[in-house]
Picture 1 (tube, one colour):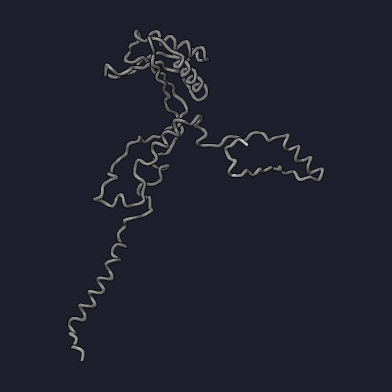
Picture 2: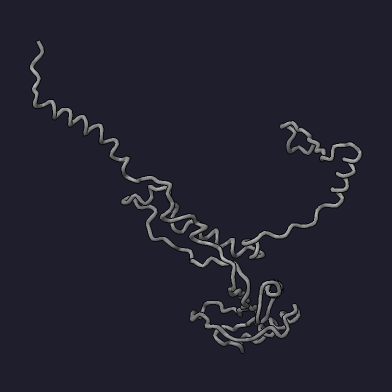
Length: 241
């Protein structure tokens, strides 16, 4: 004969079972992992590349009071870029007004710019140099013109990526500084800033290829190009055969 069942313990047992079944589902309500990036956004939106008027600079470091071949080559490239994207005048700025010390380099820079077609477009001034006596103080060239830039500076680290005390690192969001270096380098390296905002005009078609295709059609031949494929055994790859 089975022992009597305590009726008062039955509701407690049912409540315990319901609580045990609900515990594994409790974590479903917490947003530990999410692919929603609305809080941070895509890095193209956080660090957009803009094309507009901005200063372009070139630091020239005189060697022995003058300019070497590398510095002259940099100046020629600077002048060529100014002729394409610049406007106004090119400023030659001596560090802290030290024109006497850099007089020879400034004169050489002026002659180099004049030889590259910028005669009459150059002014001479100064800029506040570093107070560190051991720091190199270059002669700076500046012009205003079309340039691609990223307005927001890199180095945004408001949260600790290695912190285990919060759920910040558990989400699938990218961190705040993600993409800044890539966007900044792309803006600095692009040869023509206009390529970032519009496509270039297409060139003329290949007239010879067009005439060949028309001739094939007239003669009843296939105008397509016949590509020949040569299969090479895997053992012969790299042997020069």
